[in-house]
Length: 263
Ligand code: F6R
Image (tube, rainbow, N blue to C red; front, side):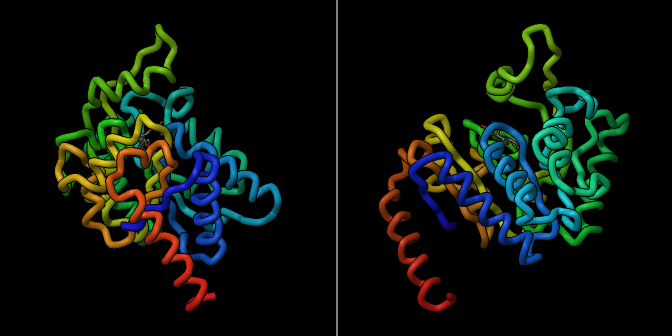
C-alpha cells in the first residue's frame, strides 16, 4: 500500500482533490465511488472550486456512494443523498441521473442492494473509490465483524458509530440504527482506492489497518489485499504508525522515481 503522510488535513485534501481532478480530466476516472462524513468535505469543496474555475467538468462522470441510512428520505438533512446533493452534485455539472446513492426509503432493501451491485457492474465498475475510516476501523458502514467478502447489504450500526454520528442529528431527531452499505468485497472490486484519515481520533484505526493483521475486527485491514490503495493521512492520524519514517522515505523515493522516469 502507498502511504502518503501530509503535514495537515488541508494538505491531505489538496493531494486527494488533485488526484481526483487529474484522473477525471485524463478520463481515467469515469466512475467515482464516494464517501460522506466530515473527512471528504474539503475535498468536495476543492472539486466545486475547480468546476467554478472551469478546470473540470463532471458531465460524463458517474458516481456511486458507499452508504445510506435506512429509513431516511433524500430530503432529510442527515441523509447521505442530501449531503452529496448539497456539497457536490448541485454545485457542479454532475448529471443527477448518473449519481447513485443506496435508496434509504426502499420498501425492499434486500433487492435494492442487489440492484445497486448490478448498476455498478452495468457501468463497468468503480474506477476510484474514496474512503474515510471509522474510529473502529469501519469502511462504508462495514462494522467490525463484517465479512471481508461482503456485498452491498443492510448492516446494523455499532453503538460507537451511532454515538460518533449523533453530532449530526438534533437531540429529538430519530437516528437510524440500520444502513445500506456497499460490502467490503464491493469496495475491493474498485480499480483504485484512496483512503483519507485525519485527526488523532483515527490514529488507532489507521495503525490497525496498516500494521495489524487482516481481520474482520478491523474491516479496513481487508484493503491489504488490494493492489492499488493509496492511504493519505495527516500527521495526527499517522502518529501511531511504527513505520512512519519508512513511509515518508518510500514516498520521497517514489516522487524521485516518477520525476526521473515519467516526466
Ligand atoms: C461515510 C462512510 C464512513 C465514514 C467514516 C468516517 O460514507 O462511509 O465510513 O467514512 O465513518 O467518518 P468521518 O469522516 O466523519 O470521520
